[in-house]
Length: 142
Image 1 (cartoon, helix red, strand yellow):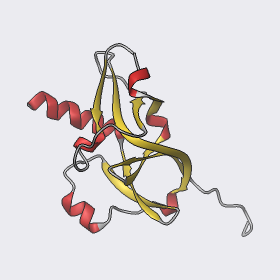
Image 2 (cartoon, rainbow, N blue to C red; image 1 turned 30 degrees about the vertical axis):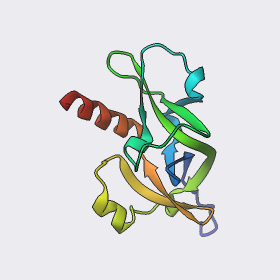
Image 3 (spheres, one colour; image 1 turned 45 degrees about the horizontal axis):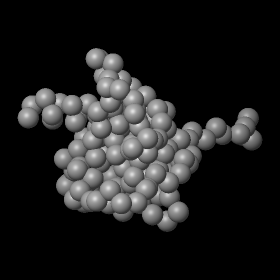
Image 4 (cartoon, helix red, strand yellow; image 1 turned 90 degrees about the vertical axis):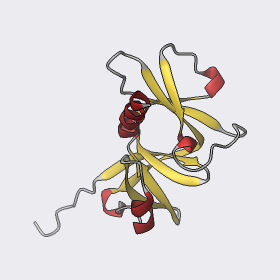
């Protein structure tokens, strides 16, 4: 009884960067990662993540479209253009923390929901499906 192994809950994350900042998104939300020029699916909308997090930068380097599994009510797919997709990792639930206070005070995006440490660096947890809904709502009100 006292020696029963404890099951450690883990979160599988895809890591990527936007303007040098580390982000993690739950892998179960991701339908695939594609080179922007190699992604020829029909009916896909995409948004640059650097539009939300800092200044838009040139598309030099390792930019990829992170396509969501979830589709819109009309059946269209949604993708986010991010730089430097890095890795897929398992993070212990115990290692997830609230957003740093400065980020919490400055955030305008509800889809940022927590933080984690990966190889000594703070990363921000991003709900890609939630960001997709926020983006669609914002675009509809423009």
